[in-house]
Amino acid sequence: MTEQHSTPTPVSMDGVRVEELLNQGRNVWIIRAFGGVLLFAAWAYLALPHFGSARFLGDSLVFVGLGAYAFISGFNAQRHTVDLEKKLRLTLIMRNMELESMATRDHLTHLFNRRHFFERLERELQNAKGFQRPLALLLIDVNGMSEINNAHGHRVGDLVLASFGKFLLDQARASDLPARIGGDEFAVILPDTTEQATQSAITRLQNALEKTTIYETDDVEIKLTASIGGAGYPWSAETEDDIVRAAWASTSERKHAQQALHVANGASATIGAGTAASDPSTPPSS
Image (tube, rainbow, N blue to C red):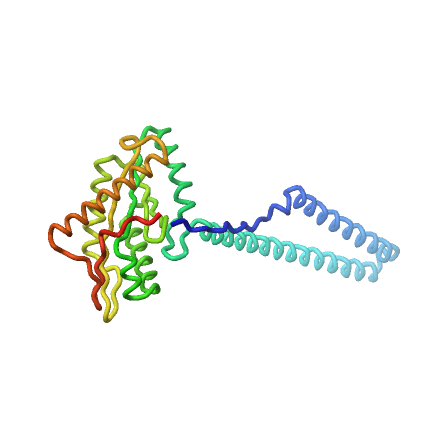
């Protein structure tokens, strides 16, 4: 199941070139110099003929006051302009961050979306090969979402998926990259993780999920199971596509093993009025 995302266009100040800003600065100084020359010429024309008299002193004081007022006003105007420009730049930065988040995040779980996930997987694989480090990939198929939607409605189903996304984010390391890549399909990139560490991560996730109530209200309590498979570089494959295929094969194998275990134990997956159990036989969606 592929989600389509439109990429927002970042807000940019590229239209205001550096050269234009420098020209604006030079123009300001030209205007100031021209104003100063005019003020001096007016002082010379009106005050100098009365040099040595009280009128000369009075006119000079008036022009000094006018010059000081013009200087202070210009300084304050420039400071206000600089402050306004800083606020605008900060607003643009914040807006671009919001747009970037919208372009890379899943709207429901706030994890990374499918497109960004595969872009990062390609990048992380290149880094792993360049630095000769291992790279692991977990693919997670949440079980029983169709039954939950049918029993409790799609709104509750969305809340369950959002809660599972938060669970996955809480379980991830700071260097991990969890993402939602389909309706009930999730993935985690584990940089610098060996095959043994990958199996440990799968076990840890499964144990944590067993102990977690994903969704709970007064009359509904939902716990989930999930089929989690893993693959990685260099032990599973060398390319991005092959690693993803190996991880899906591992996920399918675990799903079938879970199904066989339930059948062997005589257990059936049901959803009651208050508790939703998951169906391990649900195949991965594409």
